[in-house]
Length: 79
Image (cartoon, rainbow, N blue to C red):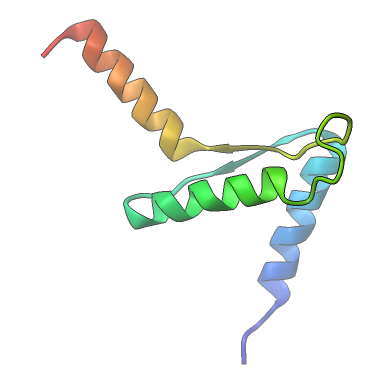
């Protein structure tokens, strides 16, 4: 049997973050990087009914940020 306790705990933490306006950060590597990107999009947009006025979950995929920072450092320092 699957223990649903940790899943419910994570859902509660995400909901608390939404209620208080805090950020949720998600990170993955390789194929998991694609999974966390998809998760971020789902959690940020799917629950919305009113895209203009509804409060959104503040969620960021750190894998994408890491890649952008690395690209900026590479461009700044050269090959």
